[in-house]
Amino acid sequence: MDYFPLFIKLKNQPCLVVGAGEIAARKIELLGRAGARITVVAEQFRESVLAMQDTLGLIPRQKSFSPNDVTGMRLVVSATNCRTTNELVAASAETQRIPVNVVDNPDLCSFIFPAIVDRSPLIAAISSGGVSPVLARMLRAKIESMIPARYGRLAQFAEDFRLLVKQSIQEPARRRIFWENMLQGRVAELVFADNTEAAGRLLEASLHDAEQQPNKGEVYLIGAGPGDPDLMTFRALRLLQQADVVVYDRLVSAGILEMARRDAEKIYVGKQRSNHSLPQESINELLAKLALSGKRVARLKGGDPFIFGRGGEEIETLMQQGIDFQVVPGITAAAGCASYAGIPLTHRDHAQSCTFVTGHLKDGNINLNWKQLAAPNQTIVIYMGLVGLTNICHALIENGCPSDHPIAVVQQGTTPNQRVLTGTLQDMPQRVEHEDIKPPTLIIVGTVVSLHEKLNWFKTAQASAG
Image (cartoon, rainbow, N blue to C red; front, side):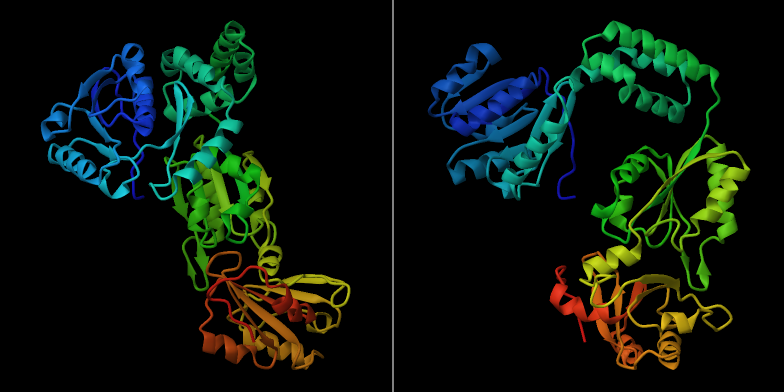
């Protein structure tokens, strides 16, 4: 982060604004809404600024700025058209370690004004770090449309009952779950309808029930998709953001982990070939142990949990121990990577069926129905097949596929680092070695691969094709 987001209490605090033009007026108004005691220094004052003298209690000083003007200030803003004055204001504030903002001069700022969504006491602030204020304002407009004005009333309602809930539910994790249930259910709807009395009665009744019930955990088996965070479902995102613990594997991207709660515990259980962080049986037991301790556990798995994800094994353990769980499907790597590579898995001129198989080696052999896989007019998608690629290509040729049959290897599909390597069964093993392709990869075999060049819509700097 170029700027650390922070909310500063300015009520009754002395603040200085240098300049009294149109832009300065907007900053004065913002500071006034925060309850600041504002001194304005300027050689000339606009009428709009003078009009705020009574409503905001401004202290106007019609003069040139001098460094002593910043002394004793909690925060300083310079909004003049003079670069020399702006530099002097910034230097004077920095000397006394006072936060300073120079409008439209990010290089002189120690803080910047965000675009604000005001649902007091609920405040949301959006910033582009000064790079694009217009974009920040556009995002503010989107957020404002999603947050009704009465959310401020809901926040105040929560404040009114905060102490009671804290005294009744001692454990922070249980208290957080209680509030989540209250603030997105019937209680919230009653507050939005201005019936805070009924909302209070319902909250107190729910609080009594929560005190009587044991803390019960749950597991969310979430398909994280092939890599691009935008491909996660709304339900996956909602459950991920309410989880107390996130258990994830190596195919879950950093961007997806960023969507989890900041205070959620994150446990890596990734498995690589011949390097398992935890064996599958231990992962199953870990999920059960966490849930039995009252945690809400998000089990993030790359792609879809039920397609070569061993999700079925994990929920079998949960069912045996009577643990509640939910399964959230994800976009499997075959669908996601093929789409981003511009390779349709089915096409009326090329493939009328599609088969998913795993290329994971066992005892040095890949035990697949090669005769069936070598049949024409189909697409074969091979997961975890990079290590055994040479054997795969040879087996398909030996069982009837032409040596020039198209094949593609997609590395880190759907991400900015995606690479798509196309070739034939005959030359692909050598090409992969030459291009230094590394997991995670997906292999696609079939004449649909020939459409890659024509349909390759997702361009990346590292894409290559044969």
